[in-house]
Image (cartoon, rainbow, N blue to C red; front, side, top):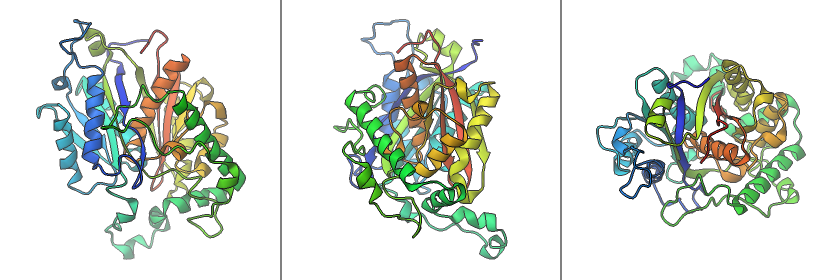
Amino acid sequence: MKSPQDVVIVSAVRTPLCRAKKGGLSHLPPASLLSAALQGCLERVVTTTNSTNTNRKFSAQDVQDVCVGNCLSPASGTAALRMAQLQSGMPSTVPFHTLNRQCSSGLQAVAHIANAIASHQITIGIGAGVESMSTHPMTHIPPPEVDWHTMKTCPEAMDCLTPMGVTSDNVVQEYGLQREDLDVFALQSHQKAAKAQQAGKFQAEIVPVGSITHDDGIRPHTTLDVLSKLRPVFSKHGMTTAGNSSQTTDGAAAILLMTREEATTRQLPILGVWRSYAVKGVPPRIMGIGPAVAIPAALEQVHLTTQDIDVYEINEAFASQATWCIQELQLDPRKVNPNGGAIALGHPLGCTGARQIATLLYELHRTKQRYGVVSMCIGTGMGAAAVLEVEPQSSL
């Protein structure tokens, strides 16, 4: 049943996703990427003097809070991203904060804003995510500052230091996965993404950054033979390769949320309704299984089953964990990442969750379907998932 207090999404955009160090956005810092995403998000709804709908009233100053997910920037990153917010056109009266929940940071930022709206703290806000893995590569992450003598007495705490690729091979070993299945999954990710890009399916969700208008990590001509010849890169006898892992990537995304009442009053199109969100913990050494735990929890909140969901956007951190989660939840593979995932598009850590929301909503509208799920595993051992709905009468 609809409620004036429902949390709805009225704008969802992302920048192109480009290869770290080699791609079209590699020369830009995170602030530039975020500014482009925020500007694009607002431009979809801000009233202009040339607007054909004189009843639609919205301006950047109406935003009541902005939350941005980001993983790799140093302490000064918050100041840089606040600068990006102001440069994007929002006045200084609009507050701002950042958060870091690893790979789910973009989704968590949207959840923060959704929760603030649901609890009546605000009525309008933006949840966003950004990462420049060119500017701040994962290889530059310093070791944690802890009392090592104490921590070494807790094996599970020490498992938090397990490299992500090793956690992938742990999932392979734990559940008896086969290398060919991982490579086939990776190939299909590129094939689906290439087909979607060629058909122009990403155009509606992408806002350009300068002259950069397209994702540049998709490999339309890769083959199973090529992928099968790649050597394991994390464990000598592992099955995780550069080809069946997500790409390191630069990008940003922004989602504008408000109450249904605000959207109706301002005559803004409702792209989707935020229905639920869950985060669950799992053993750090096999952190990739997180979606298999978080998705059922998010569905339970709204009394839905896995069969009720039309489209799943599950982050492809690694083919290992993604394929296992699909199998464990007995999902129809045709419903999962229909336009490819992070193996083909890339995984800019802090951005991914917000990016997935944009991709999901436009896919649901294109295919005239109703329910979607966004989910991902999280470093140090967690999974996150959100349920979104596109209402039958909604249209872009």
